[in-house]
Image (tube, rainbow, N blue to C red; front, side, top):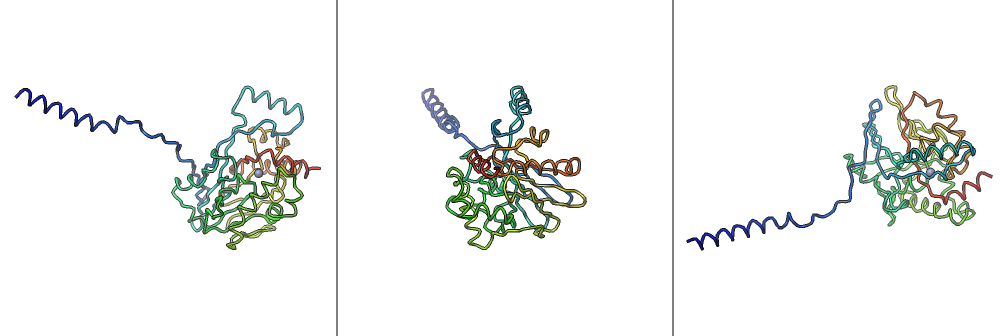
Length: 308
Ligand SMILES: [Zn+2]
């Protein structure tokens, strides 16, 4: 009897242990983080910031007077997060349309550290297929790479894309690309590849002035960083929000020193002039979202070339 009971106990233990076995196995690692979005109401508009990547701006990407830059370098030693930045796009739900401003890097810039915008969009409760319009601040790949896969598929298959004519003409020009320094040509190539499927589908649109694209949205030309760099200002019930692309790169430095430029500015003097015009107008009156550019040093060659 005792032997029989012992056998039953042993069998029960084996059953229990075998039941525990899966829990004792090493669990798979998860590499995703918390959903990357933040919502804000602007009048009747629902605005959702969509995270694409975090990054750090480099000190030598900023240009200014020696005394000013020495001060920035000194501050950076005490505050290592001074130049922290993020790449983002912004979703505006007007109640009638779903509008995306900039699309992140996709697979066209920054390797695996970038390209989370579409995931953030889904986490925020939307799908790429729902996006009606994409408004592009400029054609650097960290702002438009998310539009198109490397296989040439449109990530936002139902969206009409809008970009300033000066911007489209510059980056999509084979003639300008041919004259650009060799190291800058990948930027032209990526812009052309990213735009191609939308052009083919008749969904690539350019504007030259203050055309009305969306009710309650005003085009704000901000040439300097790139030839057709553009801001988009939405208004609702007396509230406004401006999406200003790469008007500022390192906000904690350039909001204090608008005269400091970035090596990625094709026309640094014009970029600084835009900040000096814009910032006093915005102060206290408008909500700004900064979509940081993570352009590479390769644009520096163009910037130098154009600034002379
Ligand atoms: Zn840029």
